[in-house]
Figure (cartoon, rainbow, N blue to C red):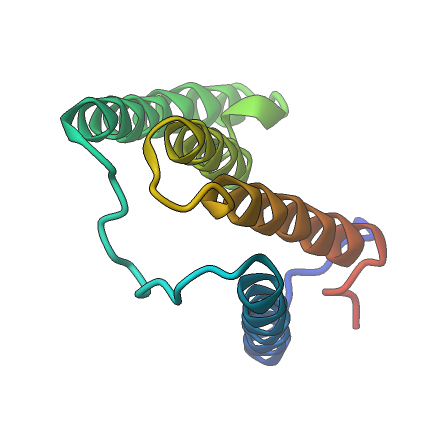
Length: 143
């Protein structure tokens, strides 16, 4: 009706499968090329106590931002106004991923044993952003 349809479950599943496949292949190639050990999925990757404190503060602040964004956008929608883009959950999650990965890369550059760890983290971040940009600009979810 408005030129935008919500994606079906099959579109979402296809997006997740393609995304995970591309990230896995890219990660394997970069690990081999940079000589980095395989990392565990969802593993606590903080390097020291200082990094852990920064990571915790970042995550806590984004949870607060998500709640504030929800409250502001829900009241704007009650007043028949458009929601603010920078307070949308998907936008905040992408910003959280970028900031966490940049902090991770900085800490790896400064404290990691393998000097190529930060390059791997930065390359993963850039590849993640490229995948998201390509899938959003090519209207991946359109039917």
